[in-house]
Amino acid sequence: MSGITSGWDVLDEAHAALRAAVAGVPAGGWDLATPCAGWNVTAVLQHAAGDQIGFASALTGEPGPDFDPFSPSGKPEEDPRAFLEAALNRSAAAWAAVGHDVAEVPTPVPPHRMTAWSGMAACALDAGVHAWDIARAAGAPSPLTPGLARPLTRVAREIVEPLRAWGAYAAALAPEQGDDDVAALLRHLGRDPHWQPPAA
Image (cartoon, rainbow, N blue to C red; front, top):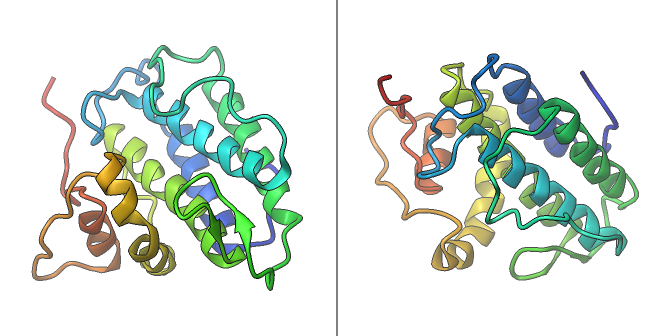
């Protein structure tokens, strides 16, 4: 399933990664544990979708999500893929209206005003990392590529520390020999690149 594109390559690739990760969740897999402690696949999906709506709302002034993305229910959506698609389409449509050379846009995350590129990349970072969370929970390969990880790392180094202090990200993990760009990004975000689902 594919929807609206934003015209921003980084964001469109991150959206595609999240879409693919959710599409790969097996039947009955919505309660699987994820790398986000205490959150199942549904909770991560709800959080990721809510964040995309939040970025769209900041840009357009339209209403934000009708739930708290930081306190998701974790109860499976009636149609998880359609639920995600609606959120991604709102985000993509909002970013499609933003010129690539715009000096400043509003964002739902600190510092709340960024260059268009940084705001877009922050939105992509959220989609990309939660795509990884969901894919790993489902036992699927990482949907993140080194080519996507590099710009996401650039914006992560701009915005993550205030969010980490608020609890949105765990403490960074120390780099390890052999880390590629994806592993380096994940460790910076407090995730173990080798995380595996707990044994049943």
